[in-house]
Structure formats: C-alpha cells, structure tokens
Length: 107
Image (cartoon, rainbow, N blue to C red; front, side, top):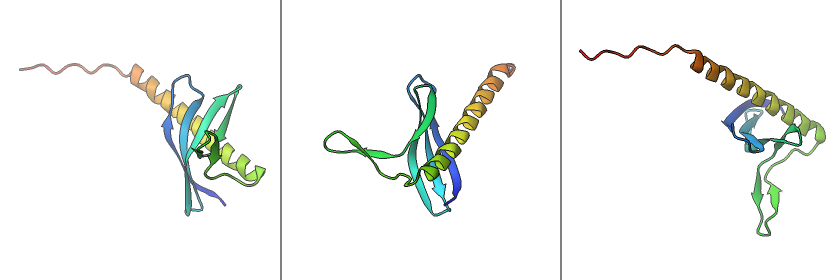
C-alpha cells in the first residue's frame, strides 16, 4: 500500500504532548483519520486512532500489522508535520514583518 494523500488536519502550538492530528489516504482507496503526532520523552511519534472501552482502556480502531509498514507511515506523517510547522513559522514571521497598511482617511 502506498500513501496517496496526507493532510495535517490541526496543529497544536501549546505545551501539550499532542502536536497534530493527521489523515492519511492509502492507494486512493482507504483513509485513516485522527492519527495523532505526539512529542514525549524527547521524541516525536504517532498514535493510531483509538476508542475508549467500557473499562477505561483504549483500543486502536486501525493499526499497521508489520513494523515496516508502521515505520513507513510514521516517517511520512512526521515529515509532513515538520514541513507544516516550518510553513506555519514562516507565515507567522511574514505576518509580523509585514508593514502596517496606512489607514484610509474618511473624506
């Protein structure tokens, strides 16, 4: 299976461990929503979508079977996340450097 689309749905700028929510499309046939980018213990990793069980534990809704496939998904998601963060930083810097527009006079 090949990743045919990857969308960063939301970036989080706060100090929480969750940094982004991502959707990944495989072979233009299957999409997995709500993959989370987490930063904890000095590293980034992904967490697959899950649901809470009655006993309070969580169970993945979808997940890769092989370590190689998981590594491929994780590398693609983290690369897209880092690009999105850089783009957001550049846009924020451009906004702050943008000269203020003169106010229109009321005549």
